[in-house]
Length: 284
Image (cartoon, rainbow, N blue to C red; front, side, top):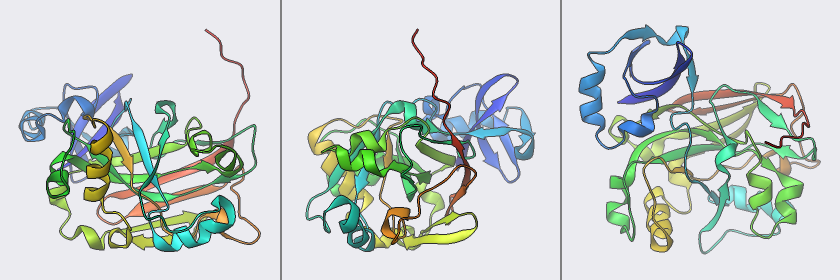
């Protein structure tokens, strides 16, 4: 199954993708359907059908409680990262969080921060958690995964280097887009062969496969749930292949007007325009 959230009649609606159309449900967020997607699919069959081209697709979980990312999870990316993170291929999993306000749609604009010129891209596979889990063993970890989608872990490198935990450079608003659809794992015949690619202005910068991960998604979930509870709707960025802007000499930082595209085989694509952030004080 493939699930989306869309803008419809002034609000948000969750729907089941059927070819070029979407069967709308009464739910306002796929998040509310994760408890039983099979039942939701049966209900969606009775719903209104609209063409995907006529709706705006937004992220498949509108307000995730947790957005987590693993660092240096592809060996070649770990090698290129030595120059800007002063690290090497990790022997243990390296995690950070992206703030909930970083969540963003699959075709939405992404901010070039007003406080930095070192904006970078990281094309990734994203896993969406569908069950509550604690101390989940590796051999049962995939039971936790409601679906997969594309993601881009936009990173502000100077702020990342300045924070011991990388958190400040990873959590800027708009910097965690994911989507366009939540694709259930049964749709993927060979997950190891899933290919993730990243483009900047049409130029291929990144390409890797799920099998290249140092720590598999199952290992990631087992590790995380050893420390804390994962909950339905939590979003996990699973690592990026080599080819990020910081890995070039000189670095290739993103600029206003650039377009970043992420493609993941079987999961679709995202595309984002980089726009200059308007530095406006908000206090309410």
